[in-house]
Image (tube, rainbow, N blue to C red; front, side, top):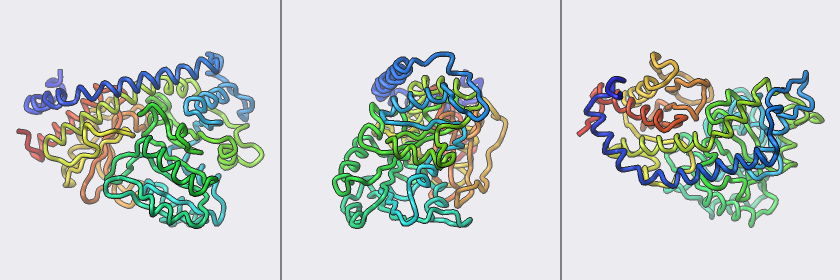
Length: 420
């Protein structure tokens, strides 16, 4: 079948050895997926989810039991006091921005302790202020070490004056580092809370949901946000984001989402409640498939001599696999292969372009049923040295695996890689 889909025999022979290398690493992934599946199921049963919650429409979104139910269930799954889960949150950046702008006031200090946040937040926190819309706050930053560890001494030094919020990006984003494990997050939260008990710890959990037995909000995080077209939407949610955390903080964020005095009380779900519930239900298994695909990608390219992050047998805390390809042509070929493996727009050729929110051209391969969905198979890369491509998603392992095959196949066809 693979040969009929255009994969060269030489590539197939090589990849057979790759799959035999990684099978043993899949056992723990399956155990975590099973645990999280039962956690989601338990929350849905406990809160008496019924089909009556799926199709509820009122003019202003008053008294919507489906909307209220999904927010109850999200709060339960993530072990928090309250939640916002809405289709009007357009993406992960929007969810994060709502948290920052809803909680931080003029003159407050935001300390990011895992390096610079994702590029699309530059305008929000004031690193870039092209449109003069940045928050009027003090922004401080402590980078991780070259080994991806927190710099506790520098964090303590930066907390000599009161800090309103500690910001932690769990995923690596476009940085060449491993994502942050739950154990590391737990340790650093305890550390900063010991220095300043009332400091608010916020987690960017994009790409990180259901990768472990616990979520950051179960180990001390006060507020957390993510996107429904990443892990928790399971590939079925067509839009939206979530915010979970302490009740008073979620309330503050809700006033920024709508307006003070209304908060969570209004807001249409636009008929998306059912897909949000269904996506959440299958998310643990979907995430497991994506992680297996990332491991397959890591091993396939590492064996060819490329630097990868993380390595196939490293602990993982997000669904992203980074491969340092070294040249522009390799990045383009890789993304062409992933696009060719897509169920939608497989005939389209991705090209680098000036994508809003980024400081360099970006190439994106994403033939998904939901545009921008990162839990579906995709790959992207900023077109800058050292030409690192970021591979993620695949609602099934088989599809993610096929994306890796096609990426390597395209590199092989263009004589950009030597398969021995």
